Length: 64
Image (cartoon, rainbow, N blue to C red; front, side, top):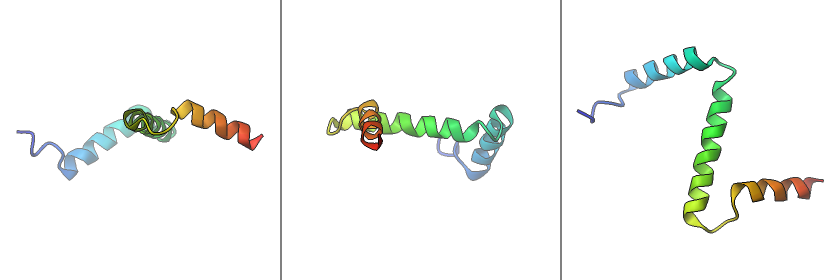
């Protein structure tokens, strides 16, 4: 039942529906937010680096 769930045609239909709902201007922002969330989750799970907010603050202070 689940093995045929993510076929290419299904993914195209899902992408088309998302484009209709959110519009072309909002999708890149949603993708960026999702990527930042996944990156933050991976960082928190590994525990090797500082949290994402600390990295952004340090980079902003370095640029000034």
